Image (cartoon, rainbow, N blue to C red; front, side, top):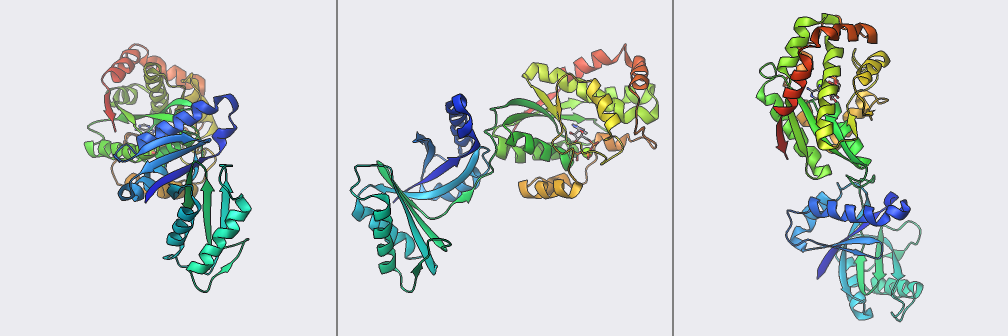
Amino acid sequence: MKHVILVRYGEISLKGLNRNYFIDLLARNIRSALSRLESVKIRKVHGRIIVDIDDSDMQEGLERIVRVFGIVSVSPAAVIESRLEVIEQTVEDLVKPLDFRTFRVSARRADKTFPMQSMELARHLGGTVLRAVPDITVDLHDPELNVQVEVREETYVYHETIQGPGGLPVGCSGKTGLLLSGGIDSPVAGYMMAKRGLAPVGIYFHAFPYTSDRAKEKVVSLAKILAGYTGSFKLYVVPFTELQLEIIEKCPERQITILIRRYMARIAEAIAEKEGLGSLTTGESLGQVASQTQESLLVTNEAAHLPVLRPLIGMDKQEIVEIAQRIGTFETSILPYEDCCTIFVPKHPDTKPKLAAVKKSEEALAETAPEMIRKAVEDSEIIRV
Ligand code: ATP
Ligand code: MG
């Protein structure tokens, strides 16, 4: 018997004129999430997406598709001819191996040429189930098993509905530059903005040899995990050592952290221009560390023109960890490799930096920094995962 995955989407059907655009994009993202599976074909029918897939690919197909943003739920379904005898037989075959005490049949006849109305069909198939399985009863309100039948040009029979991630199709909101470190927070931030339809381009500041190649590999691994949700993922590995040493040499120690942030923002903006990014995204959370205060945010923002999105700003570490575990980044994030910011942490960082004072310190870099920024972007290694 042939099977399909029925895909339901929610929010995007509310988008009025953009509706077709959203559905096309969602279909494209599904195709890309399932591209490894050769049997897959994707159709758009009756305001829904239907994925034709071989039984041998079904399990993997389901695992992959439930990560595609914009999907509310999916159901693996048998697809059969819209003839009563065939429907009866399929329902019987479906319920016989299942273990349940109570059930209902929900039927929907969208094809008006089919001789039975929805209610009548549901009752009729209820009889089929009662005859096929001993010791069961009908429960319309809270059944253990809900057999669903949809009659169109072809008929779908299914009983399972698996929740999708919701959100909006990746790409429908544009692209964001995700400042991706090896930590717990920034992959979660990237996941959250991708859920709102932004396609992230990763930007990782690598201070080799102060940060090892293993630290870089860790970020690449995180990018790979995120790519499971976003489709392809482009990662800039920015050589940051030179600029960082320049800051350390020429600026007051207590301002190092905030200055590093400002130069990260500037380099990210240069990449944004090249890549057509509409915002930057970071994993900052208010008060989590010394550099994440309102005063610091003000001073960092002043160095950037693009909006800086901080989806974790109001979250506790525990809440962030829970998401990291759920999306599968946590285990990689806690690998012990060093981060450039943890190597050069000043002993007494300025938690309330003053913009004027910071700008004054930057004067010492006025000659050298612009060229270093340009070179950092130019020498960035671009990794596609
Ligand atoms: P994370 O868990 O994401 O590493 P964190 O708790 O370590 O965050 P910070 O070190 O203050 O916090 O960094 C705040 C944010 O700045 C990070 O979430 C990330 O978006 C960005 N960031 C920090 N270091 C880097 C880096 N080496 N490369 C790219 N982005 C970075
Ligand atoms: Mg970090």
